[in-house]
Image: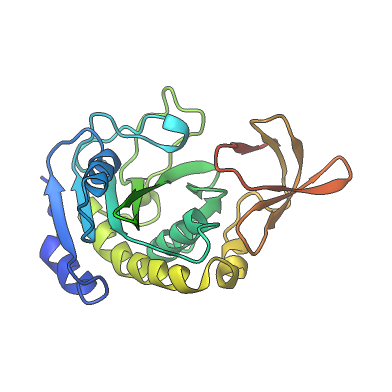
Length: 250
């Protein structure tokens, strides 16, 4: 049985996000889908929704995200949000999570957390509008304990590889305050102040990569607006769309 520090998280986050609530559900189709439904219905209070098990969890590009009680941490955070520029938000979220959990967690553009060529977790960001206000829903899934690599294109990592005593509840308690502060900072200042910190964890920088739309070349890192810089056919190309997948070739 997983122990969730819901009250402790509420005490830490409610001063940062007035009206903040925490919900833990034993099972749901998708925490992101549920908070998007609420946002479209006009429910805009900041909400952390934790799902012990998701029956239809989603990753980027509609990929399924499997989760089991205790083996994974799957949650979504919904809040009113109006940044000057949305570009690079998934990078800022990934950086906040990685920095809060372990120095050896790397970041793969645009929304994956990696450990030694293996995928630790992913981020899914969606936005809704209701009554002229913007609402963001940030979904995060992390492998806490080792899982099977069957059917996965990238072998999975587990947080317990780095933090042996890690549990889903402890990881959530540790990452939520830095994540809330990072979201507030990003809303005011965007991604540019985070560029250098991201580069220290960038697992693609300096490597040959290929993209799902047929491009290939050397990754030069990320730009101040969060786009991926690729040296391709003798020129620098900026990749902005999160619909493009990037994979290292070597």
